[in-house]
Each structure stands twice: as C-alpha cells, then as structure tokens.
Amino acid sequence: MLTSLVLSSTQGYRRAWLAADALAALTLLAIAVPEQLATSRLAGMPPVTGFYAFVAGTVAFALLGSNPQMSVGADSTIAPLFAVAVGLLAAAGSPRYVALVGLLAVLVGVLVAAVGVLRLGWIAELLSAPIVAGFLAGVAVIIVAGQLTDLVGLPATKGSTLDRVDAVLTNLHATNGWTLGIGVAVFLVALAAERIDRRLPGALVGLVCSTVLVAVAGLGEHGVAVLGSVVHSAPTLGLAGLSWSSLGSVLPAAALVALVVLSQSAATSRAFADQGGYTVDIDRDFVGVGVGNVLAGLVGSFPVDASPPRTAAVAAAGGRTQLAGLGAAAVVVLLVPVAGLLQDVPLAALAAVLIYIAAHIFHVGDLAAIFRFDVWEFGLAVVALLAVALIGVEQGIGVAVGLAVLDRTRLSSRPQAHVMARVPGTTSWGPLGSTELAIEVPGVLVVLFAAPALLRQCQPLPLPDR
Image (cartoon, rainbow, N blue to C red; front, side, top):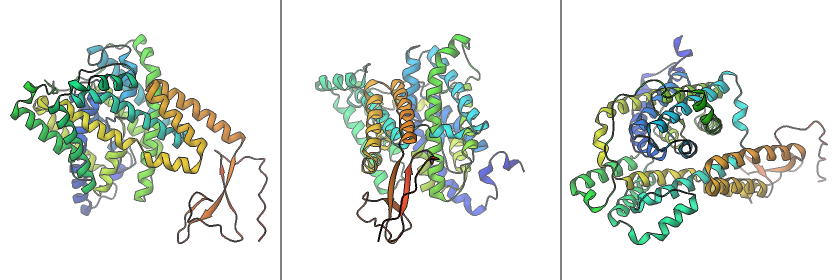
C-alpha cells in the first residue's frame, strides 16, 4: 500500500480518531502561529518565512516520518545557531542573507536525510543527555538576552550576551512603559494558560489582544515598536546566488545545525514514543526532517527541527496521526495571504513569546537530576551552558562536541559501576543512594555500568555476604 511508504501514521485509520486529530490540529495551530512568527524574527528572516518553514517541515515529515505526533517546523533552538553564523557573511534580512540561509537549510536537510538513508542514527547519540541539557540551557540564556531590548523598548544592540545585558541595565531609565507592559502581559497570559490547561492558546491570545490594542489605541505613536509591513507573496522556488564559494561558506554551520537537529529530533521522537506506547523508526524520522529542511530552503525559508513543546501539545490534545499536523499546516497556508494584518504586532509581544519558549528549554529539573546522579556529568552540562551563553552558539557547540568525545573516552577507559536499588512498590531501579526510597534487594546485586558498551575485560563483582 502507498501508506506504507508515505503517511505511514494513517495506516488503519479509524473514524473515531478524527475528533482527537481535529482538536490536536487546532491546539497545534494556536501554538505554532505566534511561535513561528517569533522564531522568524529570532532567525533574522522575514516574518512570513516562519509560516513557510512550518508548512514545509510539517508536510514533509507527515509524508515520510514515522512518529505520528511529532511536530516539525521553525524552532528557536537552532535559530540562534545559524543566525549568528550567516550573520557574519551578510546583514540579517538582506537578500544575500535570506539566500544563504535558504542554502544552509538545503545542506542541513541533505545531511540529516543522508544519516537516515544510510541508517547512521547512532550519530544522534554523540551528544550525551547532560551536554544537550547544558547546550539548550545556554541557548535559552542567549534567547532571553537577545529579546530584552524589544521587551523594554530600547534600540537593538549587538555583541555578546554580557554586552546585551549590560546595554539594557545601563539604559533602563529609557524603558518604554507601554512596551514593557505589553511584553509582561503577554508572557503572563501564556504562563497562566499553560498552568490552567496546556491546550489553551495563551500565546496566541496575548499576541492577538496586544496587536488589537496597539492598532486601536495608536500606541505606535507612544514609542511601541511594531512588526511593520509584512511581505506575503507566494514563496519563490529555488536557490538564489548558488555558487561553490557560498556552499563552502555555509557548510561548516550546516554541519553544526544538522548535528543539533539530529540530536533533538531523535530525543523528541523516542521520548514521545515511549510516553505514547508506540514504536518509531528513527532513521525514517531523520529522512522526514531532512526532506523538510530541503523543502524549507527551496521555498526561501530557514532550517526546521523537531519541536518538543509543539509535540507535547499534540500529545496532550490526544492527536493520533500526522493528520493533525497537516490540518494545522493547511490553515497556515490560508493565513499567508492575510499576513499583512500582522503589521501592528508589537515586537514586545514576540519577545515575550520567545522568552516564554526559552523558559521551556532551560530544564532546571533535568540539571538538578544530573547533579544528583553524577557531579562530573553535571560539570559537563555547566561547561556547555557557559560556553554557549558567554562565548557563542557556534563556538559552544564545538565545545559540546569536544566534551562529548572526552566524556565517551573517559567512560570507555574507566567505566563506573553503580549498584542499583529498587524503589518499593514499583518495577523501577535507581543508583543506591540517589533516592531515599530505593533499597537493596537481599541476595540480589544489580549493577549498572556507566559506559557506552560493556568492556571485554570486566571482572564480575561478588555478591555481598548476607
């Protein structure tokens, strides 16, 4: 059957699933619209290209991927990475910048799809969970630092994270009260909606209400910066300015972005498959995400990635297949012709949405769990965090890869053995001492070797005398 090759998630579709998929589509749409707009600004790209990225990533993954719930589109994790790299080659928003970002997206897609076709999914495991957690936390810090000027109504600044924060603190006296009020209100609405029900479109409600307020009250005259004119013509197919020199200039950044896309896509697909009780083909998912990147680049947009927050929204709404994503993408296509209505969107609202997203990729709980499990692994996470936040995303990912290689070498040469204990009343086991509830089982010794693989020369541990 054709569905065994494309739209595999719809195999054996039942009519009873239609209502759940429709609700998931609406939930996904409510989250995706403000997020894609905000991420396109973070990427230094025209606002409408965020919609193109969502449609391209969603359609390609729905056709070729295996995970029935995963959402693919513009993602704030990778946006700072390629924005910084391409920003060194051309001014953000310029025609050359847009062309280079599109080319980079195609290269990212080719690399990610090649990993899937060649079944090299193990590459996604190069970055360990602690290093990924630190990297994402560092990206979150960069996102917040970069949005502070828009949040308080100050002119945009360039430089390192510390430079941006210093510029805001130095000029706090020039804060625009209306701008700050709008940003804080949108953030609180999004946060309150999430606390009540994750399916409530708090970010969208805040974005729409703030836009109407700015337009009706004429707050632009009071210094509230807005998105301005939004070009919303049909996307231009193909690659502009393609040359060997441009390929060489963006290839290093494309490789780094591809590595992050592989890691996040694999982690997202596996996590929600375990949670939902279904099986996935990671290599096939890489093909879907890779083709989504190629398609996004060819329509003048930017790289796409699997999104944990959007995937969580689909799962929470009960989405059963990729028809939920296709439904949301179809509505986004209909929104493109009326994108001109977005001209009064306040930049503070978009900044608030990005800060809200950043708060969700800074996983404090994960970092705390890593610290409790292994101080060394926590140290790797902190180094990755500081390298990304203080040195830069591109340099930070280089540090993260270097740490990953050193960490695996350390584990292989000196594997740690953790004595495991059982949590009463469950089938779960954890390292002895990691939780007060876990206790040893008399006469049974369970050992966890903290290494990529068991070593051939490994002496068996004797059972304790009892």
